[in-house]
Length: 181
Length: 181
Image (cartoon, rainbow over all chains, first blue to last red; front, side, top):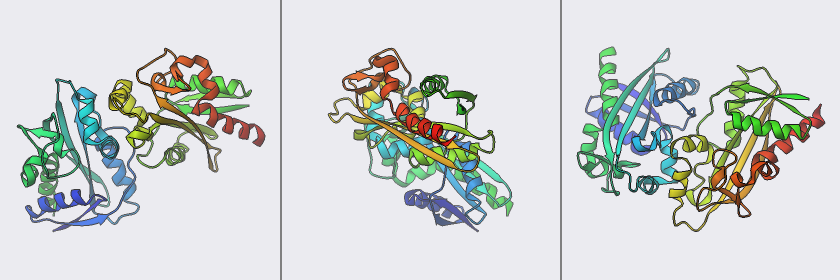
Protein backbone atom coordinates (compact mmCIF):
# COMPACT_ATOMS: atom_id res chain seq x y z
CA UNK A 1 0.00 0.00 0.00
CA UNK A 2 1.27 3.46 -0.89
CA UNK A 3 0.23 6.86 0.40
CA UNK A 4 1.47 10.38 -0.34
CA UNK A 5 2.85 12.62 2.41
CA UNK A 6 3.06 16.36 1.70
CA UNK A 7 5.85 18.16 3.57
CA UNK A 8 8.76 20.44 2.84
CA UNK A 9 10.77 18.93 5.72
CA UNK A 10 13.09 16.10 4.72
CA UNK A 11 13.81 14.97 8.29
CA UNK A 12 10.11 14.66 8.99
CA UNK A 13 9.58 12.70 5.82
CA UNK A 14 12.44 10.30 6.70
CA UNK A 15 10.98 9.71 10.15
CA UNK A 16 7.51 9.02 8.77
CA UNK A 17 8.86 6.77 6.02
CA UNK A 18 10.63 4.59 8.60
CA UNK A 19 7.50 4.22 10.68
CA UNK A 20 5.49 3.45 7.53
CA UNK A 21 7.96 0.66 6.69
CA UNK A 22 7.20 -1.09 9.97
CA UNK A 23 3.51 -1.18 8.94
CA UNK A 24 4.24 -2.32 5.41
CA UNK A 25 3.04 1.02 4.11
CA UNK A 26 5.09 2.80 1.48
CA UNK A 27 5.13 6.54 2.06
CA UNK A 28 5.73 8.71 -1.00
CA UNK A 29 7.08 12.21 -0.66
CA UNK A 30 5.41 15.26 -2.18
CA UNK A 31 7.99 17.94 -1.37
CA UNK A 32 5.95 21.09 -1.04
CA UNK A 33 5.30 24.04 1.21
CA UNK A 34 1.68 24.98 1.80
CA UNK A 35 -0.40 27.59 3.55
CA UNK A 36 -1.38 27.05 7.16
CA UNK A 37 -3.84 29.29 9.00
CA UNK A 38 -2.83 31.18 12.16
CA UNK A 39 -4.62 30.51 15.42
CA UNK A 40 -6.77 27.69 16.71
CA UNK A 41 -5.65 24.23 17.75
CA UNK A 42 -3.34 21.93 15.79
CA UNK A 43 -6.41 20.04 14.52
CA UNK A 44 -7.87 23.22 13.04
CA UNK A 45 -4.58 24.13 11.41
CA UNK A 46 -4.15 20.67 9.87
CA UNK A 47 -7.74 20.39 8.70
CA UNK A 48 -7.89 23.82 7.04
CA UNK A 49 -4.45 23.33 5.46
CA UNK A 50 -5.51 19.97 3.97
CA UNK A 51 -8.70 21.52 2.66
CA UNK A 52 -6.84 24.30 0.84
CA UNK A 53 -4.10 21.94 -0.32
CA UNK A 54 -6.62 19.64 -2.02
CA UNK A 55 -6.93 22.29 -4.74
CA UNK A 56 -3.29 21.77 -5.64
CA UNK A 57 -2.35 18.19 -4.78
CA UNK A 58 -3.86 14.97 -6.07
CA UNK A 59 -5.81 13.11 -3.37
CA UNK A 60 -5.49 10.96 -1.34
CA UNK A 61 -2.65 12.53 0.65
CA UNK A 62 -1.82 13.32 4.24
CA UNK A 63 -0.05 16.10 6.06
CA UNK A 64 1.12 16.35 9.63
CA UNK A 65 1.46 19.27 11.98
CA UNK A 66 3.14 19.04 15.32
CA UNK A 67 3.94 21.36 18.14
CA UNK A 68 5.63 21.59 21.49
CA UNK A 69 3.31 22.90 24.22
CA UNK A 70 5.06 24.13 27.36
CA UNK A 71 2.70 24.43 30.31
CA UNK A 72 4.52 27.19 32.19
CA UNK A 73 4.59 29.29 28.98
CA UNK A 74 0.81 29.01 28.37
CA UNK A 75 1.33 26.52 25.59
CA UNK A 76 4.11 28.47 23.78
CA UNK A 77 5.50 27.75 21.16
CA UNK A 78 2.44 25.59 20.28
CA UNK A 79 1.14 25.83 16.72
CA UNK A 80 4.02 28.21 15.86
CA UNK A 81 6.73 25.78 16.96
CA UNK A 82 8.37 25.71 13.58
CA UNK A 83 8.66 29.52 13.29
CA UNK A 84 9.86 29.84 16.88
CA UNK A 85 12.49 27.19 16.28
CA UNK A 86 13.79 29.04 13.21
CA UNK A 87 14.07 32.31 15.13
CA UNK A 88 14.89 31.91 18.84
CA UNK A 89 15.60 28.15 18.69
CA UNK A 90 16.33 25.81 21.58
CA UNK A 91 18.60 28.43 23.17
CA UNK A 92 15.63 30.79 23.34
CA UNK A 93 13.34 28.19 24.91
CA UNK A 94 15.95 27.32 27.54
CA UNK A 95 16.38 30.99 28.33
CA UNK A 96 12.62 31.45 28.77
CA UNK A 97 12.57 28.43 31.11
CA UNK A 98 15.51 29.52 33.30
CA UNK A 99 14.58 29.22 36.96
CA UNK A 100 11.10 27.87 36.19
CA UNK A 101 10.26 24.80 38.28
CA UNK A 102 7.29 23.44 36.36
CA UNK A 103 8.96 22.01 33.25
CA UNK A 104 5.99 19.97 32.00
CA UNK A 105 5.53 19.94 28.25
CA UNK A 106 3.72 17.93 25.60
CA UNK A 107 4.69 17.11 22.08
CA UNK A 108 1.55 16.79 19.98
CA UNK A 109 1.20 15.55 16.40
CA UNK A 110 -1.89 15.71 14.24
CA UNK A 111 -2.20 13.87 10.94
CA UNK A 112 -4.84 15.08 8.49
CA UNK A 113 -5.73 12.62 5.73
CA UNK A 114 -7.68 13.85 2.72
CA UNK A 115 -9.25 11.04 0.67
CA UNK A 116 -10.70 13.34 -1.98
CA UNK A 117 -14.06 13.67 -0.27
CA UNK A 118 -13.40 14.32 3.35
CA UNK A 119 -10.69 14.85 5.92
CA UNK A 120 -9.96 12.68 8.92
CA UNK A 121 -7.53 13.67 11.69
CA UNK A 122 -5.45 11.48 14.02
CA UNK A 123 -3.81 12.83 17.15
CA UNK A 124 -0.77 11.59 19.05
CA UNK A 125 0.62 13.10 22.24
CA UNK A 126 3.60 12.40 24.46
CA UNK A 127 4.10 14.05 27.84
CA UNK A 128 7.58 15.02 28.95
CA UNK A 129 9.72 17.76 30.46
CA UNK A 130 11.89 20.57 29.15
CA UNK A 131 15.48 19.60 29.91
CA UNK A 132 17.85 21.98 31.69
CA UNK A 133 20.20 21.99 28.68
CA UNK A 134 20.47 20.56 25.16
CA UNK A 135 21.52 16.93 25.06
CA UNK A 136 21.94 14.34 22.30
CA UNK A 137 22.89 14.31 18.66
CA UNK A 138 19.92 12.69 16.87
CA UNK A 139 16.70 14.05 15.45
CA UNK A 140 15.83 17.64 14.72
CA UNK A 141 13.98 20.66 16.08
CA UNK A 142 13.23 20.54 19.78
CA UNK A 143 14.46 16.93 20.19
CA UNK A 144 17.56 17.97 22.23
CA UNK A 145 15.47 19.71 24.92
CA UNK A 146 12.43 17.41 25.19
CA UNK A 147 12.93 14.75 27.82
CA UNK A 148 10.92 11.59 28.51
CA UNK A 149 11.93 9.45 31.50
CA UNK A 150 15.22 11.30 31.87
CA UNK A 151 16.42 11.06 28.26
CA UNK A 152 15.91 13.63 25.52
CA UNK A 153 14.48 12.62 22.15
CA UNK A 154 17.88 13.50 20.68
CA UNK A 155 19.56 11.02 23.03
CA UNK A 156 17.22 8.20 22.04
CA UNK A 157 18.17 7.91 18.38
CA UNK A 158 15.78 5.64 16.48
CA UNK A 159 14.20 4.59 19.79
CA UNK A 160 12.42 7.94 19.68
CA UNK A 161 10.28 6.54 16.89
CA UNK A 162 8.87 3.94 19.31
CA UNK A 163 7.44 6.49 21.74
CA UNK A 164 7.05 9.78 19.93
CA UNK A 165 3.90 11.84 19.39
CA UNK A 166 4.40 11.33 15.66
CA UNK A 167 4.60 7.58 16.14
CA UNK A 168 1.40 7.60 18.14
CA UNK A 169 -0.52 9.63 15.57
CA UNK A 170 0.86 7.53 12.71
CA UNK A 171 -0.02 4.29 14.53
CA UNK A 172 -3.65 5.36 14.67
CA UNK A 173 -3.58 6.54 11.07
CA UNK A 174 -1.79 3.54 9.56
CA UNK A 175 -3.94 0.98 11.43
CA UNK A 176 -7.07 2.75 10.25
CA UNK A 177 -5.69 2.96 6.71
CA UNK A 178 -4.75 -0.73 6.62
CA UNK A 179 -8.30 -1.67 7.67
CA UNK A 180 -10.04 0.69 5.27
CA UNK A 181 -8.47 -0.73 2.10
CA UNK B 1 -16.34 60.20 5.16
CA UNK B 2 -16.83 56.89 6.90
CA UNK B 3 -14.90 53.64 6.58
CA UNK B 4 -15.24 50.28 8.37
CA UNK B 5 -12.33 48.81 10.34
CA UNK B 6 -12.47 45.08 11.13
CA UNK B 7 -10.68 44.08 14.33
CA UNK B 8 -11.38 42.17 17.54
CA UNK B 9 -9.01 44.46 19.49
CA UNK B 10 -10.72 47.40 21.18
CA UNK B 11 -7.46 49.24 22.01
CA UNK B 12 -6.41 49.07 18.40
CA UNK B 13 -9.76 50.37 17.25
CA UNK B 14 -9.61 53.29 19.71
CA UNK B 15 -6.14 54.23 18.49
CA UNK B 16 -7.20 54.11 14.84
CA UNK B 17 -10.40 56.03 15.53
CA UNK B 18 -8.42 58.87 17.13
CA UNK B 19 -6.06 59.10 14.17
CA UNK B 20 -9.04 59.01 11.80
CA UNK B 21 -10.58 61.98 13.64
CA UNK B 22 -7.55 64.10 12.90
CA UNK B 23 -8.15 63.45 9.16
CA UNK B 24 -11.89 64.09 9.38
CA UNK B 25 -12.50 60.41 8.65
CA UNK B 26 -15.05 58.56 10.75
CA UNK B 27 -13.89 55.01 11.49
CA UNK B 28 -16.63 52.47 12.19
CA UNK B 29 -15.91 49.32 14.17
CA UNK B 30 -16.72 45.83 12.90
CA UNK B 31 -15.81 43.78 15.99
CA UNK B 32 -14.75 40.46 14.54
CA UNK B 33 -11.99 37.87 14.62
CA UNK B 34 -10.86 36.48 11.28
CA UNK B 35 -8.50 33.92 9.84
CA UNK B 36 -4.91 34.92 9.08
CA UNK B 37 -2.48 32.68 7.23
CA UNK B 38 0.80 31.54 8.82
CA UNK B 39 4.11 32.47 7.24
CA UNK B 40 5.14 35.12 4.75
CA UNK B 41 5.51 38.83 5.34
CA UNK B 42 2.97 41.10 7.04
CA UNK B 43 1.79 42.24 3.59
CA UNK B 44 0.99 38.64 2.56
CA UNK B 45 -0.84 37.98 5.80
CA UNK B 46 -2.94 41.14 5.51
CA UNK B 47 -3.72 40.67 1.83
CA UNK B 48 -4.81 37.03 2.12
CA UNK B 49 -6.82 37.76 5.28
CA UNK B 50 -8.67 40.60 3.55
CA UNK B 51 -9.37 38.38 0.55
CA UNK B 52 -10.93 35.66 2.71
CA UNK B 53 -12.76 38.17 4.89
CA UNK B 54 -14.47 39.74 1.87
CA UNK B 55 -16.71 36.65 1.78
CA UNK B 56 -18.10 37.56 5.18
CA UNK B 57 -17.91 41.33 5.58
CA UNK B 58 -19.50 44.00 3.42
CA UNK B 59 -16.93 45.97 1.42
CA UNK B 60 -15.31 48.45 1.54
CA UNK B 61 -13.44 47.73 4.77
CA UNK B 62 -9.88 47.70 6.04
CA UNK B 63 -7.87 45.58 8.43
CA UNK B 64 -4.46 46.14 9.92
CA UNK B 65 -1.75 43.76 10.97
CA UNK B 66 1.30 44.80 12.86
CA UNK B 67 4.34 43.18 14.29
CA UNK B 68 7.47 43.80 16.29
CA UNK B 69 10.61 42.65 14.47
CA UNK B 70 13.69 42.26 16.68
CA UNK B 71 16.91 42.10 14.67
CA UNK B 72 18.98 40.01 17.10
CA UNK B 73 16.15 37.43 17.24
CA UNK B 74 15.93 37.01 13.45
CA UNK B 75 12.74 39.04 13.28
CA UNK B 76 10.96 37.29 16.17
CA UNK B 77 8.13 37.72 17.17
CA UNK B 78 7.28 39.19 13.72
CA UNK B 79 3.98 38.15 12.19
CA UNK B 80 3.18 36.13 15.35
CA UNK B 81 3.56 39.11 17.68
CA UNK B 82 0.04 38.84 18.99
CA UNK B 83 0.33 35.13 19.89
CA UNK B 84 3.75 35.64 21.45
CA UNK B 85 2.44 38.52 23.52
CA UNK B 86 -0.43 36.39 24.84
CA UNK B 87 1.93 33.58 25.85
CA UNK B 88 5.40 34.75 26.92
CA UNK B 89 4.59 38.49 26.95
CA UNK B 90 6.99 41.37 27.51
CA UNK B 91 8.69 39.45 30.33
CA UNK B 92 9.57 36.71 27.83
CA UNK B 93 10.96 39.16 25.28
CA UNK B 94 13.11 40.89 27.92
CA UNK B 95 14.40 37.51 29.05
CA UNK B 96 15.34 36.56 25.47
CA UNK B 97 17.17 39.89 25.13
CA UNK B 98 19.14 39.66 28.40
CA UNK B 99 22.79 40.43 27.73
CA UNK B 100 22.23 41.08 24.02
CA UNK B 101 23.89 44.31 22.87
CA UNK B 102 22.15 44.82 19.54
CA UNK B 103 18.69 45.94 20.68
CA UNK B 104 17.48 47.25 17.30
CA UNK B 105 13.86 46.55 16.51
CA UNK B 106 11.16 47.78 14.14
CA UNK B 107 7.46 48.11 14.65
CA UNK B 108 5.71 47.58 11.32
CA UNK B 109 2.06 48.10 10.46
CA UNK B 110 0.31 47.10 7.26
CA UNK B 111 -3.18 48.27 6.35
CA UNK B 112 -5.10 46.25 3.76
CA UNK B 113 -8.07 48.02 2.21
CA UNK B 114 -10.63 46.03 0.23
CA UNK B 115 -12.88 48.15 -1.95
CA UNK B 116 -14.96 45.23 -3.23
CA UNK B 117 -12.85 44.70 -6.30
CA UNK B 118 -9.26 44.77 -5.23
CA UNK B 119 -6.98 45.12 -2.26
CA UNK B 120 -4.45 47.86 -1.64
CA UNK B 121 -1.87 47.77 1.16
CA UNK B 122 -0.15 50.62 3.02
CA UNK B 123 2.94 50.13 5.14
CA UNK B 124 4.27 52.13 8.08
CA UNK B 125 7.46 51.43 9.97
CA UNK B 126 9.18 52.94 12.98
CA UNK B 127 12.69 52.01 14.05
CA UNK B 128 13.54 51.78 17.73
CA UNK B 129 15.19 49.72 20.45
CA UNK B 130 14.09 47.10 22.93
CA UNK B 131 14.28 48.73 26.36
CA UNK B 132 16.10 47.07 29.24
CA UNK B 133 12.89 46.92 31.28
CA UNK B 134 9.19 47.73 30.97
CA UNK B 135 8.40 51.43 31.38
CA UNK B 136 5.23 53.53 31.13
CA UNK B 137 1.55 53.07 31.72
CA UNK B 138 -0.10 53.86 28.38
CA UNK B 139 -0.90 51.80 25.32
CA UNK B 140 -0.96 48.04 25.04
CA UNK B 141 1.04 45.06 23.83
CA UNK B 142 4.74 45.71 23.40
CA UNK B 143 4.43 49.48 24.02
CA UNK B 144 6.24 49.30 27.44
CA UNK B 145 9.40 47.76 25.92
CA UNK B 146 9.64 49.56 22.56
CA UNK B 147 11.75 52.67 22.83
CA UNK B 148 12.17 55.57 20.38
CA UNK B 149 14.67 58.32 21.28
CA UNK B 150 14.92 57.07 24.84
CA UNK B 151 11.20 56.89 25.67
CA UNK B 152 8.99 53.82 25.35
CA UNK B 153 5.67 54.02 23.48
CA UNK B 154 3.98 53.41 26.83
CA UNK B 155 5.71 56.50 28.28
CA UNK B 156 4.59 58.71 25.40
CA UNK B 157 0.85 58.50 25.96
CA UNK B 158 -1.10 60.01 23.05
CA UNK B 159 2.16 61.35 21.64
CA UNK B 160 2.80 57.81 20.43
CA UNK B 161 0.08 58.35 17.85
CA UNK B 162 2.21 61.09 16.24
CA UNK B 163 5.15 58.81 15.48
CA UNK B 164 3.91 55.21 15.52
CA UNK B 165 4.07 52.63 12.73
CA UNK B 166 0.28 52.57 12.82
CA UNK B 167 0.16 56.35 12.42
CA UNK B 168 2.49 56.16 9.45
CA UNK B 169 0.50 53.45 7.67
CA UNK B 170 -2.80 55.21 8.41
CA UNK B 171 -1.42 58.52 7.17
CA UNK B 172 -0.69 56.96 3.79
CA UNK B 173 -4.04 55.19 3.76
CA UNK B 174 -6.19 58.13 4.85
CA UNK B 175 -4.50 60.60 2.48
CA UNK B 176 -5.03 58.20 -0.39
CA UNK B 177 -8.64 57.60 0.68
CA UNK B 178 -9.39 61.32 0.95
CA UNK B 179 -8.08 61.85 -2.57
CA UNK B 180 -9.90 58.89 -4.10
CA UNK B 181 -13.43 59.98 -3.09
